[in-house]
Length: 105
Ligand code: FES
Image (tube, rainbow, N blue to C red; front, top):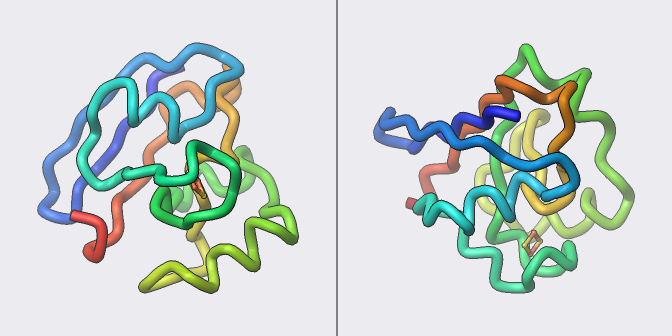
């Protein structure tokens, strides 16, 4: 599935992510700036915070309670905030757009 990452300055990068990887893993593999993923995807660091484009909110599903509480440690949290390690790539997410927070650039 194609995933597009938009940096705070507006620059965009799109990558093909394999089904089953997390959006965070796709970002890290491709050296997308702003996704440090310090905890390696354990939902324990909040350095993979992204904003999901409004058009994709339904498809990316609900946050887990653990994700919700970890987001309390992220800066600039909005209703469309997610932890990228908790979004799994699937065919349904082909074309997904996420934005990086200003604090992570
Ligand atoms: Fe640490 Fe997502 S990589 S919370």
